[in-house]
Length: 532
Image 1: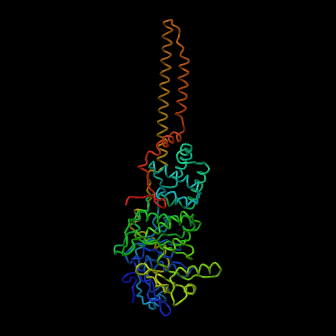
Image 2: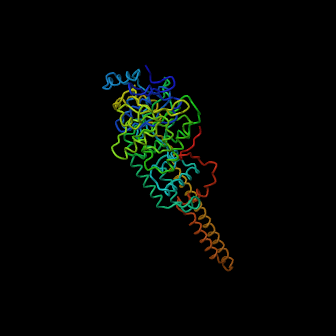
Image 3: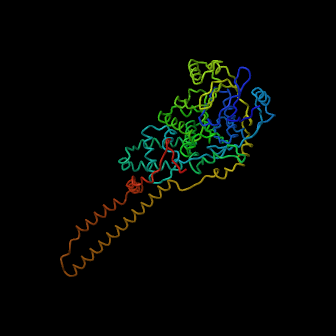
């Protein structure tokens, strides 16, 4: 009988008559990415669950988004009292698998902080590219957003939350004339459009995502005391109501992994595995430039030991440039009701190495729930021949936890003390206000000094006039000099009485470009490089 791990890899399933020999995914090729596809109700979630269990057992941490709430059951063991126990045992016997129920080390996360520990990042860390994608900005609007980030980076202004970004855009609008000379045209209407999109984002719950403490990837990549990899389950049922926010969050996480992790070369197993459910949301209406960057990240991140597995209904949802990099594939049933469905089915079948025992296209139509057409990389990275496979049953509970069970697990998590309380440090909006106030105080002090000097000059002139009268000399006409003094005073006063934002802005703009050594560096997807 076979267990969840074989000598070299992960046991996925097998079959009886008409099905394949035992199918395994080699752990050393777990970072060559993968695809789990199939129509609704064909078993994609179970396949995702058993792969996560196996990676965790092998000591590989996992991250997955729980779109339907079903994956929370991985925190508790399956039970002989469960309604699917008998079918599971029958399937295990058929494929020669020893089913031992077990719970797994699960940590719950939630952007809204309701069903898990809050997940946050800062505006600065996300960067302008992903924010532009999140808000669906035009090219011109994205350009102005880049200017705001450039100024903030050069001046060391931490953009932590949406309020900071709004304040930074307000400053850019107030100083648009000076800033446009250096960075290009900045239109008030463009800034207004971005501010409106920020308001929409805030109404959709985006404000919960930005702030501190920001998520530390080391916590996602941790291990349980027994050496198993931690399974990070992100509650995404509510998040799915804002699909662009959901996809941008996962893109940001992928970007952080790419920028922070060092190269590891060819390892015996992945360092981290990332499951991207509802993958079509990532590519729907995405500009080609963004898709190209995702393709580049997918191609390069495997050398850092990270495996990415896309879960979607149809392989056609994934662009060809990325689909070609997915070496491990589990294809559940596809239904061909329309001409387009039939075309997609043929295309899906063409992505597999043919098996002379059956037609791949027919097999994809015929496999039942919990069955799949599979192909995994073999030695030397060669794609395996397509096989019909009965997927093994899960060791953990199939289905969601109760609310009380989830709360109990969250209460016992060591991450609660670190992430459940928001940190309130000095924001960019506060720094901008402080700098403007300081500039205003300096201007007021300079104006007061000039006024006092003018008064002293007038007093001296009056004393000289009285002195000349006393000596019966013709009085000296100080009117012209007084007028000059008054005009100078007026001009000086006017130049010193600029608005707070204008005074601060001119000072700041003059300094731009002098701090190139302090400028922060951004990566492929616009997120910040950090020290490793």
